[in-house]
Image (cartoon, rainbow, N blue to C red; front, side, top):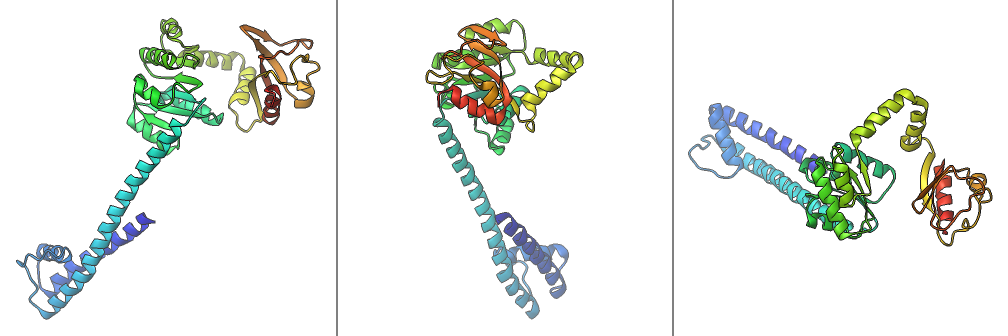
Length: 331
């Protein structure tokens, strides 16, 4: 609204300026530059007096120009100031609200770096509707995140105070996708020192960085270049499988999904075999694996007994998976 009014007032001020120059050139026989000069000093009400109208018509025209020109110039300046102050105020208030929101977050995910790898992480977390906050050092990328309504902090993720500001002690996980392996090692070390239970997924570019990242506390180390190569080969040699995986994980229009859900102590599934659990019959879902402690049971048998603390990997319809997750958690 303010911008529209500013455009209109600027256009009117320009019209008055042109009219003033033309009027003085005709009525006072002034050359263009003198007419421009007299118009400007008249509208601004400076009135140096070195050039003045000599005719009656010129004086009347000057009076009209002062009233209209000064009024329009003042109004335009007021709009500019209002837009500047209002814009800054919105930025300040918006930033304050964002920081307050971040300060109250718990069990969230921290993403360090929103570059080529990190931006895809952010996009996927948005798709999964996860609660997360991004730490980005580059002001331009940070501005883009804010414009996209992503909770973010502009700072260096390797600094203790920056990780503390995004609630690393309260977070459930951190994804460090910085471009340098040394920075990711440092972030992992810092995160573990503030929150020993935090789950860390780290990016690595060089193979020798993997061991260092694990020693620093990273639970999972991902090599984007290696994963990209594997997917390219799979797309060539096993295209149907790749198409299925892509659709399950990344196609928002396909209602199938794969989820992991932990069996709670009060879940009615505890003590039942998979054959009698009703997972396939009631929820039209398939349990493809079970994590029991450090043991991974793939393709569990029908007579396998479900235990509290088991983590099931289930393939099914999104709506049914949500219901099954509530049942598994004992809700």
